[in-house]
Length: 196
Figure 1 (tube, one colour):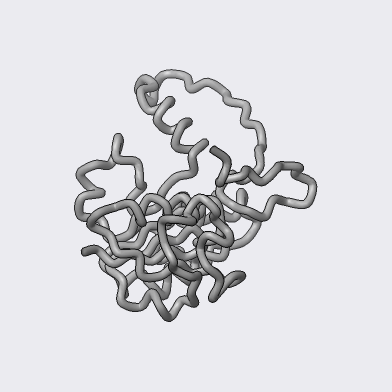
Figure 2 (figure 1 turned 60 degrees about the horizontal axis):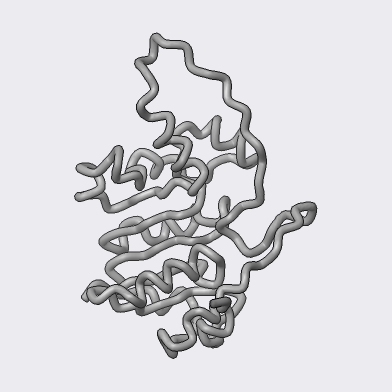
């Protein structure tokens, strides 16, 4: 059995990871880490897991003996966790934006803060199997692009060679679909995961 831990398990992405991992026949979920809900049952935050598990949210110490660690934590807060786990687990999968960009200047421009672990950036393999399948087979650190970025990358990948003009794209800002805490000016609703 593969022992797995999910950090940020109370968020939307964390909840979906929990659902997938709990249903996997070769995975044992050993830690669902949440700083907001330690000790509470997983289904108190994720009602869709009611009959799937009796596990409770835990603190980070419970993840120490895991084979794979998933980081479904907010952007800019993942860097310390990556520093801690990068060499302590067989596989680390980062679902935040902290290790998606290789250029620290670009990171700082878009996230508004300097990258705190630039020495680790080159060790990450982008989690897009359609483009990096061979590298992912042996990767120990994987950075998964967000759903919108992944869609854009895959859509633009077949674009002709570099000497062809690239279209100017217009991007629209949308709420972060991964988190549960929207920016104050972003009116989005919380979906009911228990709905039929």
